[in-house]
Length: 245
Image 1 (cartoon, one colour):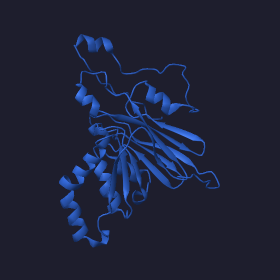
Image 2 (cartoon, helix red, strand yellow):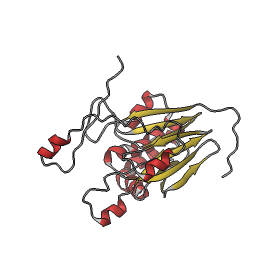
Image 3 (tube, helix red, strand yellow):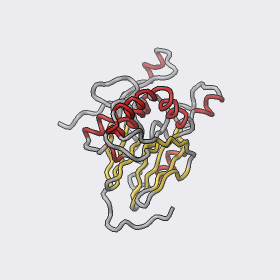
């Protein structure tokens, strides 16, 4: 696709809608990040409470067109079909694209045809003001350029998330996790997903103006000694940030 100049530079805004982990936290919604470029909204992940958070943020649900999934942990996709349904109920008439690692299409099709099919038929036939079901387009993507408009481009990169644990090779072939890189008007936005330092993460950040290898990140909430004493093979800690003021 040929990328054309849109004239005046469009404002770019990044907003975290949720940063919570898999355990319910009354002060945190599930993982979800919005990148707004002008009047276009890109959503990355769809964790617990994402639709309510979008409404609170003043995002027009009916305008949403592009969703990118980093991986298939339930806390990142738990409300993914709420996005599909709620955007429709708010007036969406265009197809909405859900892009993610392999199995994204299978998951979305299962939700569409085996879980919410009766709800969709009820609303389509019983509430004709909705105008009939507006389709979703679920796409399994590979690393590289995966989406492009005249305003932005999105690249996917494979990242490491739990790949060093004692999983079978058969499972690891299916456990594919992505980070995403958004490019717009000379700006770079890296969405890491859940990962550690790895080649994919570094590729996402290449030539990113915010990358600074020093000082090293300050860790909080990690107590390896306690974990070792308890015989834990895998420990989890949530780093809570204090609210301003």
